[in-house]
Amino acid sequence: MLIFKSLASKNYRLFFTGQAFSNLGSMMQQVAIGWLVYRITGSALLLGIVSFSREIAVFTFSTVAGVLADRYNKHQLLMVCQSLIAGLAVILAFLTLTESINIALLITLQLLFGLVSGLEMPSRHAFVNDLVTDKLYLTNAIALNSSLFNTARIVGPALAGALIPIISEGYIFLIYAVASIIVVFIFRKIRYLPVAKEKPQRNFKEEFLDGAIYALTTRHIRFLIVFVASITLVGISYTVVLPVVASEVLMGDALVYGYMTSAIGIGSLIGAVFVGSKSQVLGLDKWILAGSFTFGVGLLVFSASSVLLLSLAALVTTGLGRVFIFTGTNTLLQTLAPEEKRGRVLSFYIMLFMGALALGSFGIGLVTDWMGAPLTLLGSSFGVLVLSAYYAKQLPMLRKRTYRAMKQSGIV
Image (cartoon, rainbow, N blue to C red; front, side, top):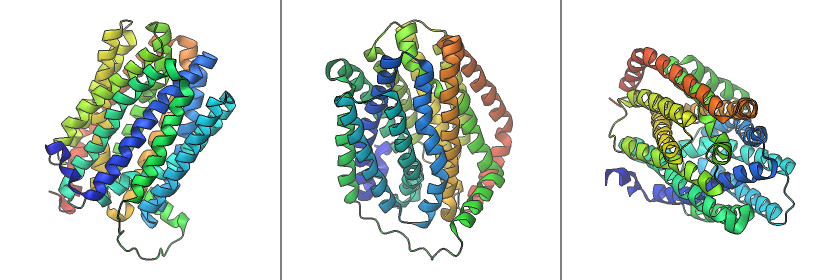
């Protein structure tokens, strides 16, 4: 099948398998953390703060990590980060199972998880480009990664939602710890010989500024990064208040919360299959536009629904839209950025995305405590639709500049 064509590379197959364990465990952990926080506090604001603590740490360290990804061996960086994640997962499981966990410890651990994730993300995204030797398969590999992530978003939350009432959140964290350890052993089997790099002639600060100047002065790259950050700030943080909607609007429990998160995963998987079947980069800018409008409409319907089936259908739609946005943007940035700056460009993309997600998570938790989830989500949906209209207005500029960049690099 076309969607699996990039798996012809053995190294990419190993990377893909490791990501499968990592994503599944991570999605189970996220559901368990969200439900644990809301169960012991009943506060949407604290849900936002716990989410903010992880995301602000990713924001803080992701740009520094972009320089590391361009300067050093990405495989080795990933091995170190995955080992640290496994250690933190063991600590989280131990504290929860011994009933020693509290909000302060959760926030501290989320900060540490975010720090390591911020160091790991640029290398992980840029590593895909290194592992896929045939660049014609790059779009497929990125979409396949997205498919994998969103399959985990379907299976992971459903499993967590079903298991939490039976085995408690602590054992969900233990499952994540075991999965993280397996990832380390799988990544060790990757045989990666990085392209020899000249010894850096500039110091860390100069390389950082060089990447920043390129990302912020190249108009089409800057537009893509800022647009995704804006959509994230006003819209993507809706996932933070899903436990509130499950409990107070739909009158459900952890299982309903798991169904809701899985519904987003189903839509995201459908979107990833569509993008993965695309054989070229040209036209992805239109997919981003379609995705932003689709996401905005789905969020609008979700904000007004108090019926489980309608809410799940709306969440499927939001998942479809967000994958078109993020996979399309990720692929365009990886294609347009020169190899020697790719890690830093991706790190700025991740930095602004995570910074916007952190602020959005805190803001949506605060506003939900004040106004309630339905009105807060309604405002978010209007913000997404306004940004979509702005993107549509700027699309001719984006198409012209991206086509010129691809032509200069020989892609088209």
